Image 1 (cartoon, rainbow, N blue to C red):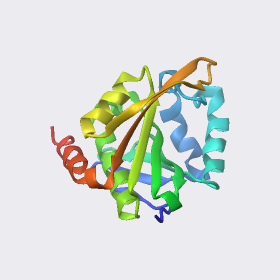
Image 2 (cartoon, rainbow, N blue to C red):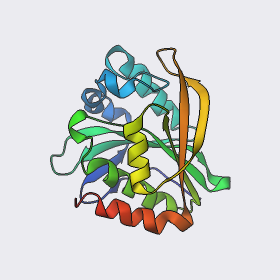
Image 3 (spheres, rainbow, N blue to C red):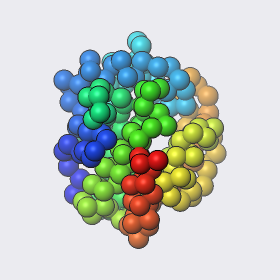
Image 4 (cartoon, rainbow, N blue to C red):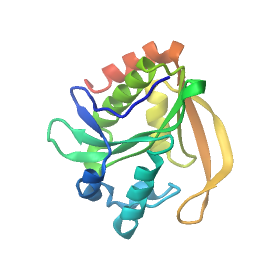
Length: 191
């Protein structure tokens, strides 16, 4: 598997590999405390720069972060990333995903997932993983709706930035499942 930073886009979104020049562009989209409620790091207000620095640093290891632009407006509406890139295992996780309130429950998330999954499988992935907090029912619903397989819950797996223990729910899509998931994602923006 060979994943490299590059622009990913389709009719609805443009995902640009995150660079230092995106710092101030992404800041307003991240400035919503509700986005960060169950995450391990906070990235709003006074926490933003340290979160951004961590995302930039992680790109030197096994992560490719993307700033999400909505093509219809040209506005930045969020962030998403390839995490835990395990090239020898042909496995990658999609995560650190957040969107502005106006982009949630729109074509943005299905379009982002379509771009990310297409690129991952075209780059040699055999498995793409997703995970979310146990009480993040909106995220779990989106993963289920796209056709990802719910694999289970790791109980009390991590600390959130607020110090609360969080259950983590895992989902995945295998290469053999990708055609059906792709069809689901292609149909969702049209609805």
